[in-house]
Picture 1 (cartoon, one colour):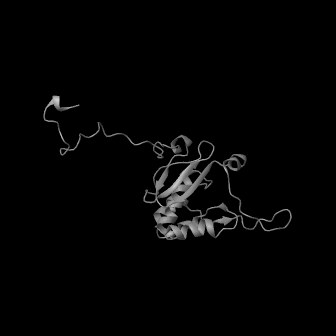
Picture 2 (cartoon, helix red, strand yellow):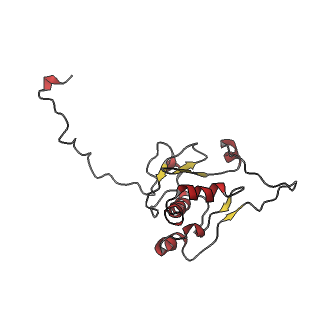
Picture 3 (cartoon, one colour):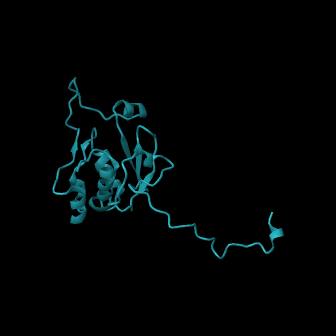
Length: 174
């Protein structure tokens, strides 16, 4: 398994991290992933699965375990400490970034960077073993389903509820 930023690997890891390691505490998760890192992440590791049930860890990581690693050890050419930069759309395109993930109160916004500057939000309660797609087409706003296999429709739409007002006579309609 590779954790290279694609939704099929990153979303389950982030959802599991929120649900288990950080016990649904978005502030704690944000501090760990954003605020407490000077530059950024080189790789998100299986340590984000701490506290998750063994079957989830096994499904997401198999027999492999590795720690998350930051880029905080970088040294600039002039020896000054590295500084985090704000990433603009142009920066993302110049660096060939393909995916962006924004932690929001309602879930994780998934942005297919080459194709959009915003994306759909995957709710925090989404089953983390869902088969997400890496196809950017599924991550546009308004998005199709981000699932690898779109859900089938169950047939025609249900009828209006019985409590809906019904005109008493066809001529009464305007």
